[in-house]
Length: 109
Image (tube, rainbow, N blue to C red; front, side, top):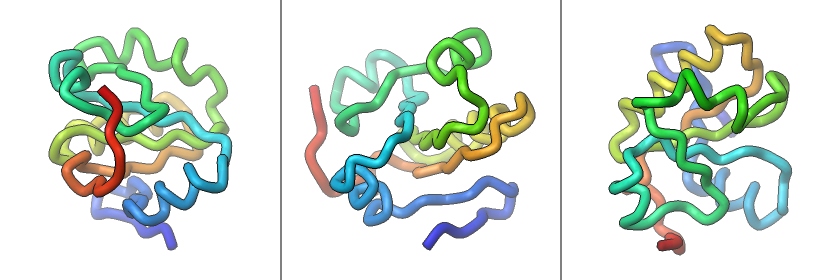
């Protein structure tokens, strides 16, 4: 079950994300950490779009504004900011996973 955080961005739990992945649901997973952070390990299937270049690159990575997008970072702060920015750009189906440290499953390197 999705819930909303205080900033109006829909949150998604680790269990929900894992179920979506296991069910091979169609969505774009975006990691907004730095390339150095990304290289230490990322959730399988994630695309690295760091906050430093986010506004320049996001429409190339996620061209469909109604497609499901899930965003995460190290602690949840940058992903919440990125999700709000996407909503302001007109994206309608953005979910914030928050912190990668909450992911208890496999990481890619």
